[in-house]
Structures are given as structure tokens and as C-alpha cells.
View 1 (cartoon, protein in one colour):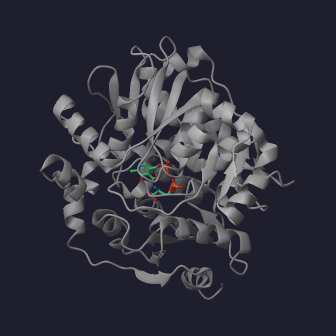
View 2: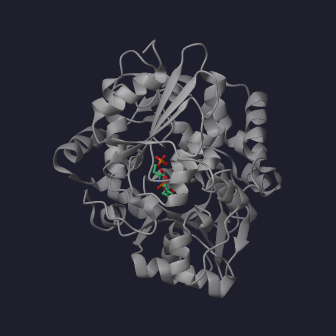
View 3: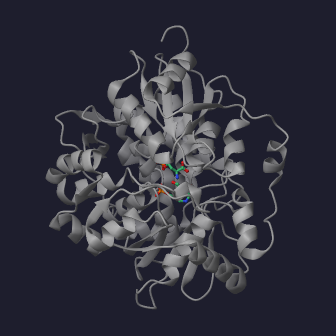
Length: 459
Ligand SMILES: Cc1ncc(COP(=O)(O)O)c(C=O)c1O
Ligand SMILES: N[C@@H](CCOP(=O)(O)O)C(=O)O
């Protein structure tokens, strides 16, 4: 499997180098040259497979000969052993045609663990002698999941940027109470979009001759490792006979991109319903064809407080690759661009969208509690809002992706339901530990300084 850049540059990459690098040399994102196919009879059999086996089977063609299949399976078994449910991604009925896929059973209680537990192990496998410095941006959940995945790993260091004061206290402490010599947390005076922009700038400009790598969903393996749970849920619902829809709480569009890849591999997904919070850039783009950056608003679903959805570039590329370089230039220079006809056609064929403002998030949280006895977090609630308002025929099952555990957002849950969700034991312990982080300006040189410092005297 070779990888090509979404910006059309001439360089191609092996799976190994695509996984170890941040962005392509032209600033684009790596995409596999072709999406592998899974025939219908194989998909039907997946319902019987343990989750790690299913994950290894889906990941194998994307990883190619970078890691052999038996080793990849071992890594997946290890990666999912720490999840607190034997099914790893339990599928829970809500009411009527609505289902909840619980993706928050991993060590840091968000769906990010699915990919990062694998990525951490794969990076350790591939890193070799030359140290790798990972640089990441988080609006709350990627940070702790990445830290949990790489803390203490030899030859790998991680500098993680989060927007100061714009993640929940639990999310912040999950990052800043991990005391490991290879981890640095920086609280950036700015928004998540500033953090993500700075990370991309460092990849583009480099930091001396350090080897930089990505833990965000700009890393293709992050996307690939989020594909298997779509297969797991759809196989359980017998999607080969009756296609299903997924409601996807969206920010950086990584989860939705993984759903699109699952469909492109042959999974009968009727529709991907993209749910945003009040930061509705994707919803506006899907309904008007104009992708236009605005000011990031602070909401009760902070991990989705994102304006520039990195992985949307991958979708634009699939639909009309010629247009992407100019569109990305226009976004950088003017903050906006129009989708081409081919891109709008793809969006109309595969996706629908909805945006959940704060009252809608509260209403969906209450619906889940009253109708199904479930306590859900505000991100999941945005997804459920979109599912409940879908215009799909009534016989199409809709699976809402439960992207975070409610205990990560106790204040928002209490505001909706009048009661705080119980803390897990691990979270309680975390509150007794000191926090380690520095506050910095949104300035690439300042961040590069921290990267050099963490990398050590050789940098
Ligand atoms: C809890 C939660 N839900 C939804 C999202 C949005 O997912 P994506 O960025 O893959 O669109 C995020 C952050 O990425 C998140 O942390
Ligand atoms: N919501 C994310 C933002 C980063 O997204 P990623 O999937 O690109 O890592 C977060 O929680 O950090």
C-alpha cells in the first residue's frame, strides 16, 4: 500500500513512513492510494469475531508489510485488553430504532483510545534508533489518550498543546497529572484551532533536524484504527441485510472520515449523519456548499469546539482531488472556499448534517435518560440530537457514537439532569495528584523551544 498527499505533491510514502511522519512534504495529509475492499460474506462473519481480531483484519491492508499480521494482532490484543468491557465497543439499545455505540470504555474514557492505544504500540514497533518527537493539539480528549498511549515509551517523546481554560477540568487533569519524563503539556493562550495551526506549522517548518510525528487524526493510522468499530456495530445489526446509519459527533472530522472509509471498504452504511455543536462550520458547508471559518465558541461539548476540521480535506480529495490545493490556499488566506460540484455530490450522497445548540444538547441528554435510562455526555448528546432529527426512513437503524464517558463532563451533565454522574475510581485518584503544565503564547517559536528542550541536548 502506497500513500499519496491530498495536495497532489509528487512524493509518495510507504505505510511505515506515513505513520511516522506528521504531514506530507507539501503540507497535505497522507491518503492510501486505494481503499481495500471487504466482500459482503466476510462482513457478515465479523459479528462473531473478538474486537481485537476484527481490528487487526481491517488494519492489515493499511499497514502492509510495515508490521506482519501476527504481530499486528498481538498489538491489537494488547491495545484493547485495558478496555473495561469484554466487547470493547458495546452496542446498547436506546429506544425504537436508536442505538448507542459506547466508545468510551478505554483507559481515558473517550473514543480516542481506540486509535491511540494502537498507534502508541505501532509507533514503538516502528520507531527504531532515531528518537521521535510527537507534537499534538487537543481540544480535550486526544491529549490524554495520546499521553496514556506513549508515556514512558523509550525513544518517543510527546509535546501536547491544549487551549488554556477551554477543556473540562477532568480532561485537563487527565493530561497534566501524568508524571512521565517523555511528556510535556502546554496550555496555549488561544483556541484549539490555534493549537492545531501551530502543530501544522511546526511540521511544515521543522524543528532543527528533529524527527517529528503526529498523534492527531492527521496521522492516517488514527483514521484507519477508528474504522473497525463501524464494522463491529454494523455487523451486529446485520447491516448486510438492512443498511444502518451512524450519527457522528464531529469536530476535526476524523471519526466521520473513518466512517466514510468503512463504507468505501464495502460496509453498507445508509448515511453518515454529521453532528456539530454550535461550532457548525461542517453543517453550514454541507447545507450551503460554502466552507467558512468563524470564531470558535465555547460550548458544553468543548472537544468539538473546532472551526478548521482537518480531515475534511481528505473528503474533498476523494471527491475532487484537483481542487484541493487551491481550496486549502483560499482557506489559509481568506478563511473560506466553495465546494466543487463533485464534492457537493459526494456530500449529498453519503452524508447529512445537523447542528445542536446548547438547549438541543440538554434535550437530547434528557431524552436518553428518560427514554433509555442512559446518562450520556454532551458530545454524544449532540450526535443523538442529529439522530433524533434525521429524515431517514423509520426502518433504518441509527447508531449514535458515544464518544466520551459522562464522568468527563460532570458539570454539563448535572446542568441537564440535575445530578452529577459518578466519578470513576481512576478519576477520583487523579484529583489527588499535582498538575504539571506550562502556559505559553500561541507562538510557534515558543512551542519549538519546548520541543527542543524535551528532545534533549542533541536537538
Ligand atoms: C468526545 C468527542 N466527541 C467528538 C469529537 C469530534 O471527533 P472528530 O474530531 O473525529 O470529528 C471529539 C474530538 O475529536 C471528542 O473528543
Ligand atoms: N476533539 C479532539 C481534537 C483533536 O482531534 P484529532 O482527532 O485530530 O486528534 C480532541 O479531543 O483533542
